[in-house]
Structure formats: C-alpha cells, structure tokens
Amino acid sequence: MQRILLPTLLASILLLNTGCGAAEQMKTQNDLSAILQQVIDAKQLSGYFHADVLPERVPLRLLRNDWIHEDLKLSKFGKPVEIIPNSETHQAYMIITDLVRGEDSATLAFEYPPEGLTGTAKLSRQNDAWVLDSMTLHEK
Image (cartoon, rainbow, N blue to C red; front, side, top):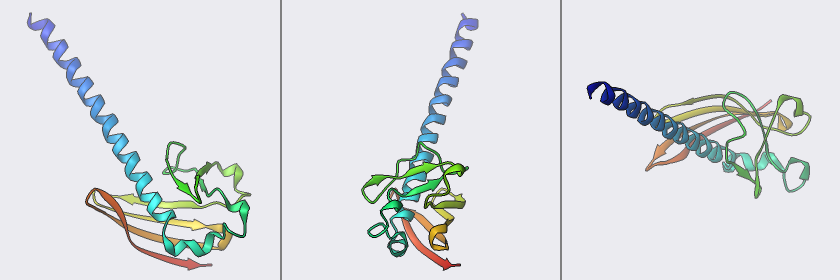
C-alpha cells in the first residue's frame, strides 16, 4: 500500500509544480506585455513615431530578441505590434536593448533607429498594474 501511495504522491507534487511553473510563466508574460505596452504608449514617444504622416511606420515593429517574442500581446496605432526578425530591419522598428525586471520595478533601454532615438524607462508595479515612472530620451 505504501509503495503505491508514494509514487502517486510524487506524481501529484510534480503535476502541481508544473502547473505553478506555467502560472508563473503566464504572470511573467503578462508583466512583460504590460511593461512594454506602457513604454510604447508613453506620451514622450508620440512625437517620434510620425505614424500620421509616415504610414509605413504602422504597425509599430519590435525587433525580436531575448525579451521580445511573438507571444507578446501589444498594440499601437490601433493595430497589433509586429515582432520582426533581424532580416527585416529595412523597415522602421524599435528594439529593446536591455530589460531588468524585479518583483515591483522594471527598467528597460530601447532604441528607435529611424529617429536616432535612444531611451530608458523606469516602471513600478502599483496596485497590480505597471506604471511608467520616468523616461529619458536622447537623440543621436
């Protein structure tokens, strides 16, 4: 009897841990989407996209890298953000060059090459939502 219970108990623990891993991954994914959405929606960036006069900049494109992948749910200009590979950098795109996320804070660096723009954004989690605290921009 004990021999049957122990493997069953171990299998149950394994299943529970696997579920927690998936839930944690989903939370991380949702956090990343929320953080990035706050950044791309920042009013400080609105004067650099020129989507109203340069229709080729719609939709916004983000370069795929370690932080950016197709599973992210982002939108800009009323359209889903496109995640593009390095081979498509002939189009206007934004790239996240660094991202550090803690439990309640995040800092990311980015570039928007069509405008020679680099920037850093600092965010914090407030009441289960990510809020943009500050953004610094530099033109090359």
